[in-house]
Length: 187
Image 1: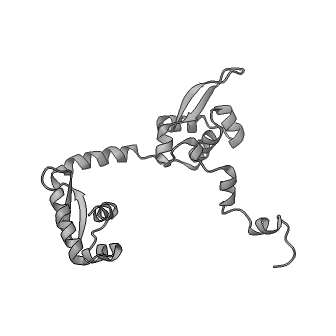
Image 2: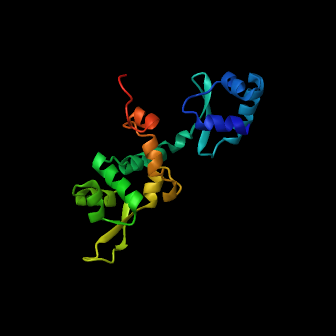
Image 3: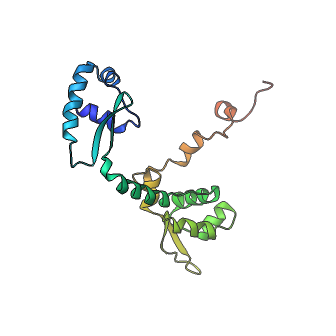
């Protein structure tokens, strides 16, 4: 029953008893009995319901909670973050070099980035983490927990290394990897 519940939970579409039986190596009849027991667990007063629709079973939000879910989705939509290429580059520089000053970010990117950093601050992806003990005492920036959450990272140490990124770069010429960059003649 737990396996069926897990499969229905992750499926964005209704799943037939036959499909569940095939995946789990069970008969459609035993799947049907398990779904009946599962349906009894999701009776009145629960936030989730089990529905038989479009020839299969699907876990859905309880119909009486439609306005609550719609309100939540409206909140999520307002929290969506669309970042420009410049913002993503700046965010990467901060993530890999933190704590870092705006001047250090600009030196790496070779362009001004004060507006981009302001945007990242507004989105809660970077934060001010103090001041650097140097001339002018510039602000230091670090990534936030929201950054980790948005990119699905457990911690900043979960970021791929620069070597990992270079290994997967689509711009990397194939013959560089094979023979150290020299082409041995006509191809």
